[in-house]
Length: 432
Image (tube, rainbow, N blue to C red):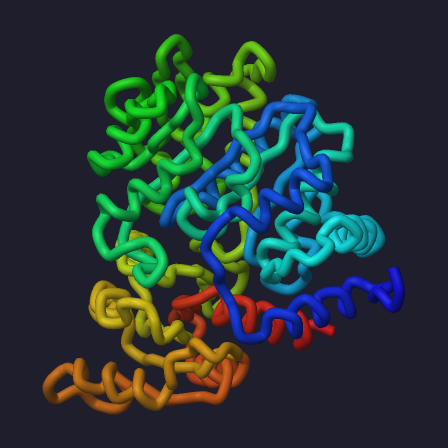
C-alpha cells in the first residue's frame, strides 16, 4: 500500500481528515462488506454491551472479574480520554501503537473502494486486533444505539442493555420506546439478551420475543438487594451473597453490576467464575471519569454525565457525599444535548459554575450557557454564594475553580467526555 501512515498519530489524523464532514453515517452495509472481506470472526465468546448510561462501567466490571478468574480478556471501550490506545485493552493493558497500526493497515488493505467513517474504520481495526489475539472472551462496548452501530456486525453470545434513556435523539428517536428498539438490535436469536433497566421499554421486550432471543429481565430473571455493608445477587440458577460494593461509586452501580453478573451466569458453562473472583473483581474495578473521586483537597470529582439520566444520578451521588462549603462545577456540553435537563438536577448542588467551550464543532457556547445559568441565580445571592463565568476551554475553567476553592470545598467536572478529558490532560501536564 503506497504512502500509508507508519505511526498511530498519523493514522488517526488521516482518518479524521477523510471524514471531516460526516461524523455519523448510520447503516451497516459498508461495515459488513469490509468485515466479510477481512474474514473477521471471533473464536471465543463475545459479550456486547449497549445502553444510554452504565455500559462503560458494566464492561469494566466484566473485564475486572474475568481477569481475576484468570481468563485472557479483550476489551473494546470508548471514547478515550488521553490516548487512543485506551479503546483497545488486552489482559487489562492498552494495546500498543504498533499493534494498532498493523490493524489499521489490515482494514485499509481490505477496504477497497468502500468509504468508512472514523468510527467504523477504528471499530473494525480493534475488533480485528482482538479477534487475532488468543483470548478466552471479548467484551465489546456499543457506541451509539445498537442496531446500526458498527460493533453490531458481530454476533454476540451474550448481549447486555444497561439502561435506556433519552440521548442522541437525532439518530435514535426521541422516546424511550424508539431508543429501546435501537438498543435491542444487538440481541440474537437463541442467545442470552440481558436488560438491566428496571423499566424496560415494551419495544425491547417485543423485539426479543419476535427474534427468539433468551430475554433476561431485572426483577424477573435476576435481581439484587443490599444494605449499607454488602449486597447480594440472585440469577436464574446462581446466588451470590455477601458481595462488597463495586469500587466504582454511585447509585446506579448495583444495576450495572447485576447486569454483569447475569451475563456471567449466562456464560457459566464456558467461563465459570468463583465467588472470590467476583468479590475481588468488583473491589478492584477501575474506570476513569465515572464518578471518579480524586485524592487530595479540595475534593475533585470527574464524571462524564452528559444526558438527563446521568445528570440526575450525578446530583444524587453528590448529595450523598456529605457537607461541603462550596461546590464548583467545571462544565462544558454539546449543543445537541437537552441542556436544561442536564443542568436542572445540579442547581441544588452547585454554587459556582466555571463554564468551558469544548474542542468540537458541536460544543455549546460557554457565554450562552452562562446566560442560561445566570437566570437561575438565587434571589439576593451574593457573589461569594453564586457565580457563572465563561472560559475558553476546560483547562482554564478548572484552573479558575482550583484557584478559588478552599480545602473544604469540592470541584465537580462534568457535561461531556471532552470536559473531563480536558481537565485530565491539564492535571497530567501540571504533574510533569
